[in-house]
Image (cartoon, rainbow, N blue to C red; front, side, top):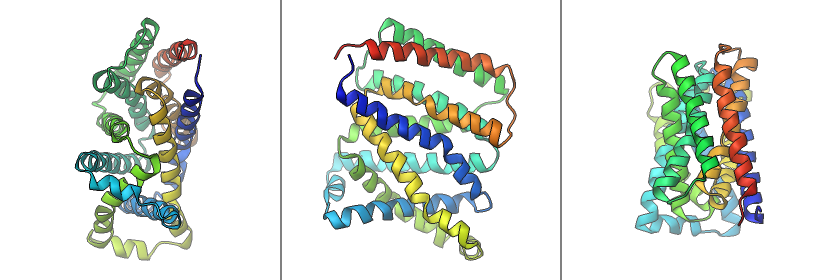
Length: 290
């Protein structure tokens, strides 16, 4: 029987995954802007958005998180991981590697599941282990079919997998941790704009439409992250991991049908294994007693 918190957790996580799945279309609209400039604005505008929410509420909990040495270290690690993930992702999408990015986010749930087993002593039932085996086989086939070491895919999977672990370990409010992360990352964003050669000239030549897209990059970043953080607190990492297959599926469809990137027919075998895993795990999750 599914609890109310589990339903909430699934809802928040699915919303975040769907939003992330269609987000590449947004980054493609900014393709003529340097990826590091997009990354900088993504960090700064996310921080300003969250600051705009906290100031009227006089919310200082997000600052108190950074005053605790243990949590400060976790939040700093989360900030570094999500910055690397954002930067690599933006570059990959605009360089024509959307399908490779989707592979990364197919690998990412497996990373989350393994981290849940190691750090939280989560346990998988027999059917869940079977699902894990199907998913791992599908990912292995995708990697084999790609014909090259998937550094983009692994970079995205590992950085976001460990980011999810940090969010779970932080044990604080979702929006508060996101505010603290973007605050710590903001100085790097400023450096990317002010000190990177040619950055100011590039930004000065942008059209008003591109400026609007850059400014709203904070909203399209913060809202899915907030939903993901809420879901991460309400679900075990193993459940969180399998729901995360939604994002790469939408991402793959976007890469193949919208961006017209190549996708060999043989890859369908790998995706059949992955979706069999999702189906098996969904059955086990719905039948589990509280």
